[in-house]
Image (cartoon, rainbow, N blue to C red; front, side):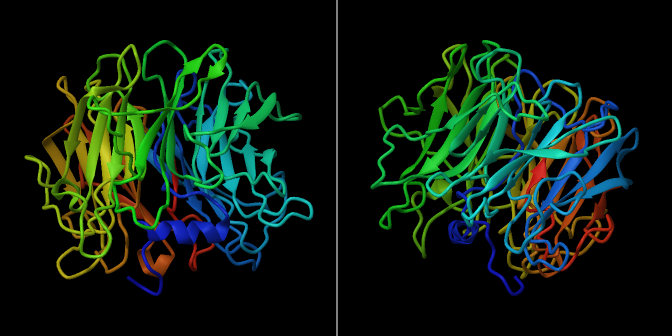
Length: 491
């Protein structure tokens, strides 16, 4: 596994605490009703932003940066790329040790000029004399790509900006995008000179007790009830020592209205018990009924040698289907590696359910789901990692027709190694504009945490290893050593 532990399970909490951020991996988030494509230069091809929050910039360790690779008719074009840091001309601030610029990515056309903008978190950025206050920066899209930026949220002594999880959507239905960031809500319209029209706090727990604080595992935005206004969903848990994995993990639903987001409602099963949350979240219409569905990755399968329940062994993916009344907890589904059609076998520590992303990989109109398994052992190589793609259908998400890939699969560049964490983050995006989303898989543990990203083209039957390519920071002219390149992808 190299010289650092994997951050793929609850160990993530401790690592993020160093940076002053909240818990949870990145995932691909539906931007809602107004912006759905990460097209920073407006050419019609989706682009990919890759976080490297531990990359050294200007000799400053863990200052962090983001690499952007632009789409083309042939897919991602690694010769058309950018490396953006706080030392980049026009980007506010300056690269400093331990800023972790890039720890939290989302996107949307914030200023309404027709070009997608990139929202970048720096959870440990100092603000004035306040260390670790945190900032969110909007990097503006344009015909030539991303350039210039503005800090749209800055923390203070008693109001840190937590940036690990961000989501973009039109939460009040006014046609302007808003930004949710763990504990802050930025309301549009945005301008390049003034930033957000308003900034307020965001609460995801129904019982926001200062003596029993909650952690945010992930957030995502999408129109769950198909009313034309974006809703917000959060995965949260209370870090109580005696809780086993899966206990205390819950789901908060905030309904988007013309007055803005409602107070959070905790989702419960039909018997009144909590609907279990997880660590990674995606939103998309997997059964093509017009309502966005919640896809919840639950990779944590227990502490020590104990597991909460057999179905959690190795991790699972849960689906809560959307309806006119919001998430319908009477219609749910659970898929794991023991589900018929899903490659592999459920084993402790596989982390099946990390790196959730949602998109249509074969152009049939049903949203499909990429699921990372970064803890998967390949032979005797612990945490080499893998990824599975589950298919959407009229009956919902299914294991039928699922495919999986690892670095040892035929046609996939590279070789599986211990601690690569292949599948820690995934993205589904249509970079060549053919109506099918390509699969992008990150392995931030590659080459002892230098990191790398793999691109799989899609066909009418879904992703294929044939013609797959990989690239790392060196390919893009970015800092290499210990960059954690791929520790977050947008879209």
